[in-house]
Structures are given as C-alpha cells and as structure tokens.
Length: 101
Length: 321
Image 1 (tube, rainbow over the protein chains, first blue to last red):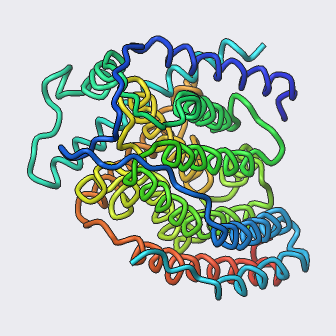
Image 2: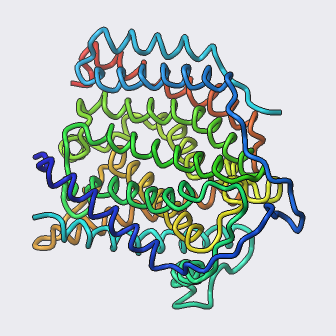
C-alpha cells in the first residue's frame, strides 16, 4: 500500500531539518586561506571554466538514461517499447567516451 | 503519523551505517594483515563514531574564491536525501516505512542527485585537484549508471514491478531473483563499487595521485557529513541489492518474533555483502579512469544487456510467468 504523499513530503522535510541540525551542531570555527593547499604545497587558485563539449556528453547520457527508464518502466509488460529502448541503448553504446589518459 | 518513526529509523540507520564502516575497515585491514581499529569500544567498534565526532569539532578551512554557499549546502542535502531513500527499504516487514508506486525509480534518481551534488562540490572549490576529481566523478557516473540501471531493470522484468515491496513479495512467493539471474550480480556489484568510490574505482578521490580529489579542500563538519553520507550510501546501495536480488528481509521466521526475525535476516545479508565488498576492495589496485570506463562500458554493460535480453526472451516465451 502506498504511503500518502503528504507523509512522504513531510518525512523528506523532517530529514532535511535533521541533517541541517546535525551540520550546524558541528564546530563553526573557520580559518581563511588565500590559496588552496595540498600535499604541503600551495597550488594556484583557479576555478574551472564551462566547456561546450561537456554538453555533448550530457546529451548522450540523458538519451541513455531516458532509454533505460523506458526499458525499466515497460519491461513489466514486455511491450515492444522495451525492445525499442534496448536497441536505442545498444546503439548509443557506440558512443563510448574513453576519458582522460 | 509516520514522522516520529521516520526520524527514529533514520537515527538507527546512521548507527547501522557506522557499524558497516567498522566492518568494512576491519575486513580491509585483515586482508592487508593489519588489525584495523581496536582502541575505541569493543574491538574498535566505536571508532567510526569517534572519527565523526572528532571531525565535527574541527575547524573549517575556507579558501579565497570558493563557492561557500554550495559547499555549505551540499553536505547536509546529500545526507538528507540518502536517509530519505533508505526510508523506502523494507527492513522489519515486507514493505518499507515509506512506500510509493515506482519507488525503485525514485531511489535511483536520488542516488544520481547525491552524485551530482558531489560533482558540484568539486567544481565549487578553486583547486585544480578538486575539479580533476569532479570531472572524474562525472565520467565515472556516466559509465556505471548504465549497467546499474540495466541490472535493476532485469529484476523489474522478472518481478513485474518497480515498487520495492512488490519485488520483495514476488521473491517471498517464488525465490530470490539472484538465483534466477546470477549473471546480473557482477555488473551490479561493479557499478555499486564505482558509485561508492571503493577500490578499484576510487579514482575521483585518489589520495596518492590527486590529494583527495573532489574532497581536497573540504574539512571540519563538512568532511564529517560527507564521510557519514558515504557510509549511508554504502548501506543504501547494499540494502538495494539485498531487497531487489536477495529477497530483502525474508527468510525462516521464528514464531512470535516476525519483525525481529526479518530484521536479523536483513542484517545478516547486509553484513555478508559488506564483507564481500570490503574483501574485493582489499585485493585490487586502483584503475586509471580510462581503464575503469573500459571495464564498465565494454564488459559490464554488454553483460548486463545480454542478461536482460535473455530474461526478456524467457518472459516472451512464457517461462517467467
């Protein structure tokens, strides 16, 4: 039997409050550094820029996730949509990103 | 009114997650011929709690140029979402404290959001190590999400439901889905190791290489909450395997002690899985990111897909009912 939606939402809000209370119970002492520091070395401070090629991977991944959700939701009744989703998934496997080397 | 029970269960889950961290550290240490934690509490069982409290009391280090708002919001948000997802896991009975139609999809979505928050944390720091770690997280995320979802889809195909309580009931009436589809477990466990940043996939925080990666400038209470969230994620994902593939809390019941028997079965299965995961991370070395992507895309995904197709064919010819 499904839990009423208001109970689910109130549970989420209660857990958010619990987590934030736990967080704020911790020490709020702060120290300020001008530059990042790692492994005994000061490293140059820099923020990453947005790169357009990332959006390509986001699009591929969204397509993959959508086809997987389609497979998951339709596999209960084994409709043709399951097969279509699976074919979409296997085709998209051709776009394998190999990452940094 | 479920609210007090949800809070109480969340607190119990926090202590259970700290217990699993202790099991993990003990097994990992034994594999390396070390003793592991042994000072705080019986055989060091309270060491994870002591570490958490110590970190909560330490000062935070702010760096010029960091996005303080993001870094303050992501730890408690990740913790709250992980605890919320755990409320749907059946422990003492055949359905969770919270239950929704399609809650399996909700849990998968929540794990993805928690990972996105980790990536955002890496990008909010003005440190090159942090954004290399965050970029690796994003690459790894793309790689393990597909076999992870395909493995879960196999269980949905067999049980005919995307609701956890119905998947568990199907297994109680028939048999654990792992017996029917054992080939689904390796890709699922590999995906979960990657999702938990456990060896051989501890690439985003590789301490000897990128000094902690996406967590490099995180300290004090932020680090404490992130480490606790990692323990909760370990509990959540292993509990998901127990629920979807190993029959959840089902098992032989002692008359008159149904809830206690179910809880014990759940804990036994969960601890056994933790020992397997810890053992695996103790015996393997870290992959490079390209090797990890190759393992997850070129081996894990096709294996999960072939398994899914085989199950689909069995279902179409009526062998799965």
